[in-house]
Image 1: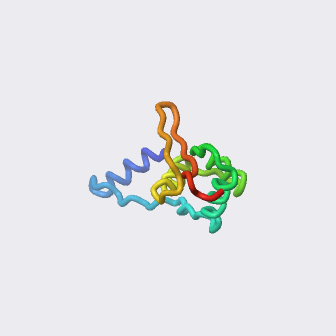
Image 2: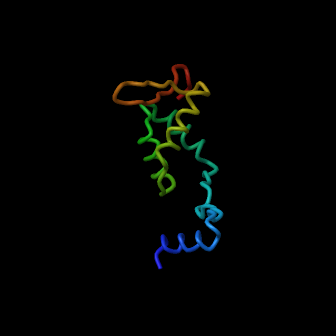
Image 3: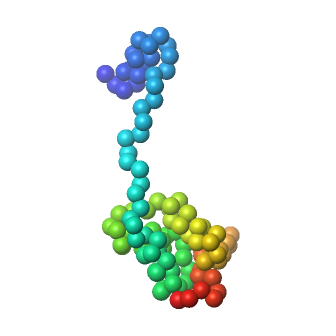
Amino acid sequence: MSAREEFLRGLAAGGGQMPEPTPATSPAITWPNDWDTVLDTAIREWGGEWDTKRVQHLYLARYRRGLYRSDARACLSRRAHQGLMTLHDRPDSRFYTLKAGESR
């Protein structure tokens, strides 16, 4: 029996009411304890333009697992809101740099 047939059979058996949704089975993302320190150190030591791809590469090299683009963007955006980085928003790219006056 296919999943669709099983769903429809369960729907009919329940008097036409939708069954209760089941919670997602994937575990919540856990961040490594030293991630903020690793990223901050890399930004200060290496300088330059930081975009989501560069953050993803750093995460992959350090922890041997991937990082979603949205999470990389959130890491950079948070630092910009804290006043540590400057956002450069161009029509074809968006990147951040260490704010002038921050120690390297």
